[in-house]
Length: 239
Ligand SMILES: C[S@@+](CC[C@H](N)C(=O)[O-])C[C@H]1O[C@@H](n2cnc3c(N)ncnc32)[C@H](O)[C@@H]1O
Image 1 (cartoon, helix red, strand yellow):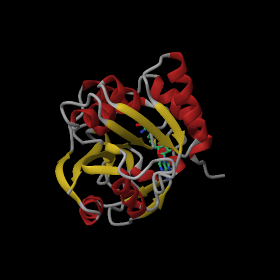
Image 2 (image 1 turned 120 degrees about the vertical axis):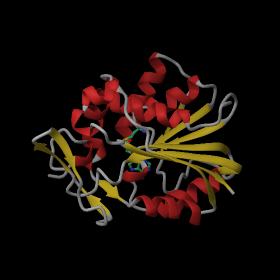
Image 3 (image 1 turned 180 degrees about the horizontal axis):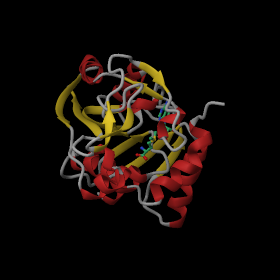
Image 4 (image 1 turned 180 degrees about the vertical axis):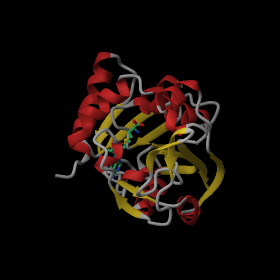
């Protein structure tokens, strides 16, 4: 039977809270791409999961709402908030509709590793545009599309374990068969140009695009990613 996010929610929470270097790296590169001064800004963290990025946004001074459609993850996020209050509000909601979020109500939207879990990118971007105030920002990360396309795998070569590229042009849903891959819950692959074009088509002006190089902690955790950027980072503002 195919896994979904509810089924892997406990596993994912344990992975992130167990100190996953990849998730800390993903959080840190996203935070680094945000405006220098976050104090008092209303930020919506879309696909917040158990709350790793929401908590960091709050620590930077933002007023944060984290939304996610996976009830179990929101329960984990709320439990962490109850145990160590960071000032984050969590709600079950879907990034493609944002029913719980009013028009023109946030200064920024973050989406860490969540847009690749959303089938309808246009609907998500339309919702982001609706809830953002004028000049609001959007910053998101996705697994780097060049190295996490359908069929991408880690193979043994004469120079060690290496990442083999998959079918880059095969956009759409795919699932990893690996029992410890997040992508066993499904992943919507898109090319880099598909992401950037969609962002611009929905009225955002691109402000930055990054492929940050991992540090020692990530390289130690996932040595087969040696020399590769694990994530694509995109920053834009509502034009
Ligand atoms: C890889 S996790 C990332 C979670 C968190 N941002 C982090 O960095 O750990 C992907 C998240 O996307 C969420 N997701 C799936 N479908 C979604 C949707 N339609 N709208 C918003 N989030 C969604 C999942 O529930 C999951 O929490």
